[in-house]
Amino acid sequence: MAYWLFKSEPGAWSWDDQVKKGVEHWDGVRNYQANNNMKAMKKGDKGFFYHSVNEKQIVGVVEVVKEHYPDHTDKSGRFGMVDVKAVKPVKTPVTLEQIKADERLADLALVRQSRLSVVPVSDKHWKILCQMAGINP
Image (cartoon, rainbow, N blue to C red; front, side):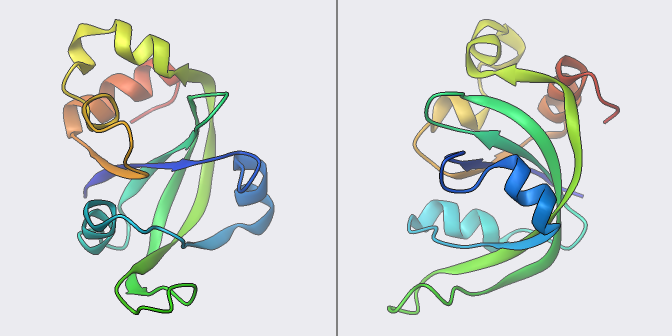
């Protein structure tokens, strides 16, 4: 199993939206590296749901339930999407400030490639972030 982090602007698609919908496609990604990250996802992979912009914090956990397929919002046909389902909220949101302050997370893709909307999370980082969020890995 691999781990990921999905960034979303809460005004466009929030954790509450994801929970209400249950399963939803993660569309609209227009960066090749982020799209390649989604191509690498397998059914059953887990990911953090991260509110970007003003909040900048991990707020929940999702699971990939459908692997990469064409994004219906992309007229060029170059980009795809995956389907994710809400698994659980975190007990304690983990802020970007907290992440940057923890030396163990210095090489986390969220910190190194802050502009990407979908990034990988290593097993080591997943465990650390779950601990910070008050949830079991």
